Image 1: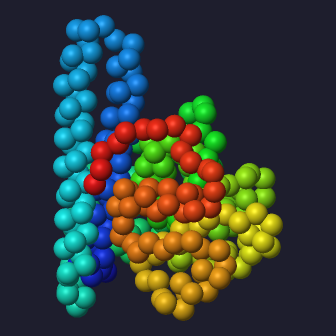
Image 2: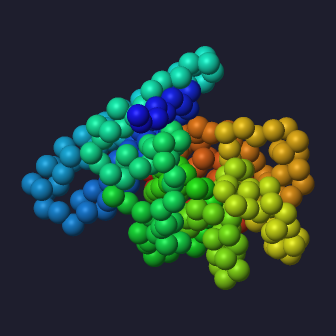
Length: 123
Length: 142
């Protein structure tokens, strides 16, 4: 019989908020890169790229707001509430995300090697 | 990923990979040169050969924890103070008092937003002296 991991609801929401915040940060990074690339484009391509930039802007704001909301709810969550997470974790197919969530929720040891100093460990 | 022209090095010491990457990206986009370390031991090694302008330090690290790390770098702090932002989920008042004595300039409770940590780093660097982002970057506010 497999053990069931039941972190507190507050911890679960904290971990989710951090992941959403990271997704937002990645969007902000992408936004910056698109901005840099746009300088060298023709007017036609620049207009198209502007549409993409606008979409990334909206996505970043969307994620940042969702993260703030999730953090806010976690602060209000009654400490005695717990949630089973194993089944939901098993559904996540993105390995790195599953690993980070598992570590944050106390499901597995987070023993991966750190990224080299100075690097931003993207994607 | 690094860019030329950024000379304000900010080291982030956090064993949580999500937080570490998020803060590194936000610092990078904010015009700083982020350096990540997942343990105090790795951070001490970096401090041995790299001039760091500011530190974002997790209180509860595995192995040498944040407070022990602060004790370990106290001699360095005497020679050339590095402004430090201490972060953590449960920062006790006694720890905060001791941390301030050991050079911590600001504290930030987890979970925090990327915008919040960027603002705190900017604030402690401003208090500390001339170091500032190497270039201005406009990014979305929270």
